[in-house]
Image (cartoon, rainbow over all chains, first blue to last red; front, side, top):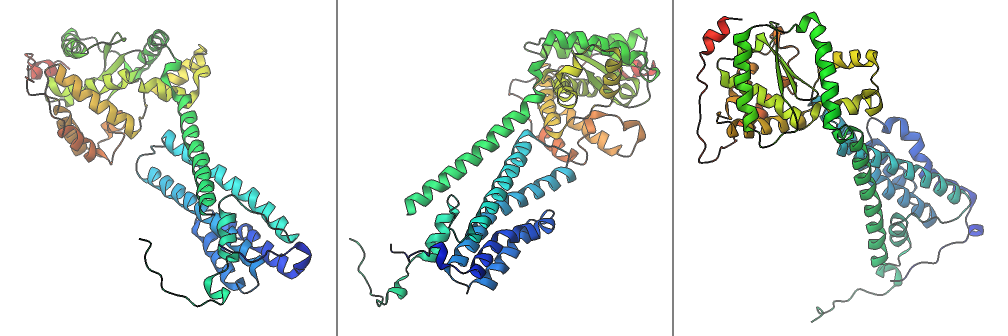
Length: 161
Length: 259
């Protein structure tokens, strides 16, 4: 698998850096809305991605990294809200597994917050910052050289017998 | 690349899975009834019983016929226990409220209202067996430790004792605890040669009384409106093939007439 070369900090314009930083800061803007309805955070991140997707690979990388890392946090938060409502509506049966999930979701949110702040600061400096797992996926998706980009024409191949 | 991504995913899932597991176990410890020994629980229970009976709402009934009937039912159920670390004490208190509750140390309080509500000694036995389930599973102590902490519970402070006593007369258990007590009651009733599904009959009759103010403090119905699932669970309990019913020989209507 071949990848495009990644730019160095001095090759990235300030405006591009700021757009990349905005991908992480989006979360703070929607935090108040996202508390009762966690899905709104994700919607805002997706909208931000589609609005800024033409601003170069550096911005795309940071936007995708922020978006992908937000998906599990959103799912965890949604699960917590649903579980809490079910507990309230049914019989106030807040089990130790529920409290464990709540703590785990809190830790995930905190880790996401810290990584997002660091990511925003690095992006503003024109640096790459790779989150575990999500950073590699975002890099792979943005910087991978696709067959159509190599100029070669697609060809049929027999199955590997 | 793909392996590296999968490894990262594994690390993430592992870390957060462990956090969930660890946090679940940690949050379970504060309500662990093992923090209080059975001997200590029984001593505390005796103190609580004395304090509860001082309350005019829970005045002990002095009626030999009723006492001896309750003792017969209690002895049958105690005999059905394979082994128990508790010395059970069944106390009847004079109240028109339909109520029974458990105090620590194997003390079970039964209202005259509940005796009057029960259409047979088997129905009353079913309720008592359910309460014994809370005793054996140590639900009361677990709840107190969870709500107050072991230090406060064992402080011995008379003021705290009074407050805890007030809480005990209106204890509510969660759904899981009620289901555990129901299952325990079914086993115990079977082992005591009483039809286990009598408990479902009691539940159905209690459900029909929904809205009755006399039921206001009865912990057994605390999972309302999920009563139907408990009725279903009890009805689906099947005794062993060699199970036989031994009816109580007492004249229940005559005993109730003495209330």
